Image (cartoon, rainbow, N blue to C red; front, top):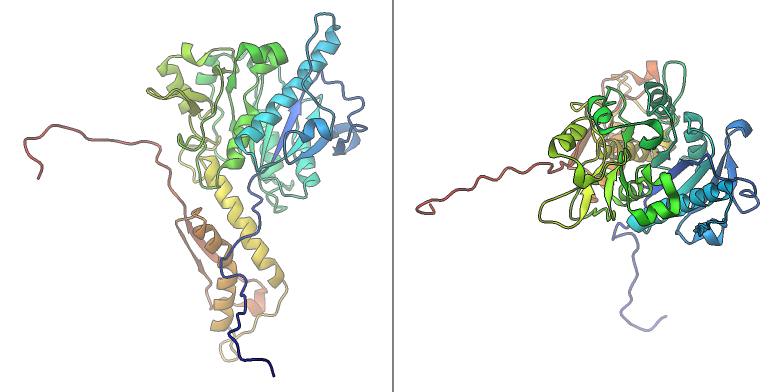
Length: 420
């Protein structure tokens, strides 16, 4: 018999500590026509997609991996270099710039980098998500286009996300994500006037956002040339990666952008753009960088998607929150698929204990999100009167109350003769 003593049994799980979140996992597809791709595979890059549409892929957990594991380093531009060599060096410098910007904004993020020399297609988006085994939550797209972003391009990207009649999208395959798209306004002849008068907002484009803000710093131009007229895609992608799914990347306290000379893909500097023009661009639902009077920093104007303003999915955080909820609910419910459902032998309807058990399982992911401050509240309801014996289907109704965003503040201030 052991000596009398006071014994302790260490419990585990009481803190409720969660496994590492996959919310920060991001993808970046860069189309760089002047990039010399010879040797990328030998340098450690994998390929994703069919051979005629393959992209070169690297998985990065910190920025130094880009040079250490994949051989992509910042290149010095020499006046004696040939034209093709200079263009390749600038392309590589652009890769370095956007990757480092991503990790500057999201130091603990994971980035799947995809490189191609042709315009980015929906096929490339699917290929990168498949390569990442469906773990990517948001993808930034840097694509050169001489015609600007067209309806056909947006339709192709949205179809990759949600599919169309007869075509399955990533959402139906339980791999939902958001896309942030940018292009070179100088190449396409885009102007602020054309942007202001030609918004791409349309019902059903909830997975797409358009970035038109960039850094027009002359020192950056010396490294990457005209490639600096692409949007600051690494930066915005890093901000989204850092953000909790319910957070707007325009949050001033949390997401200072830190551009040296903020401007637009048209080549216009922010300081030269009127307030009227900024309001027009904002109304057209573009994402760009602005400043606030009395603050030396610069920040994103908002987190618009291209869905209509009245949609439940008008902002990136609305989409990310819903995507996280559906992924989480499926994770908990999947083990129950094809399991037996016991019914009341008298009524033939679902037993109360079975209903309660399924409701509890379906609500676990939402409970986790509410604890993390990503939802204001939720409810799971199952009608016990449904005839599962006839249909083999359980209908579950889930309602979520999202977290709001303080986009505007109205302050009433006046003098008074007494405070009562």
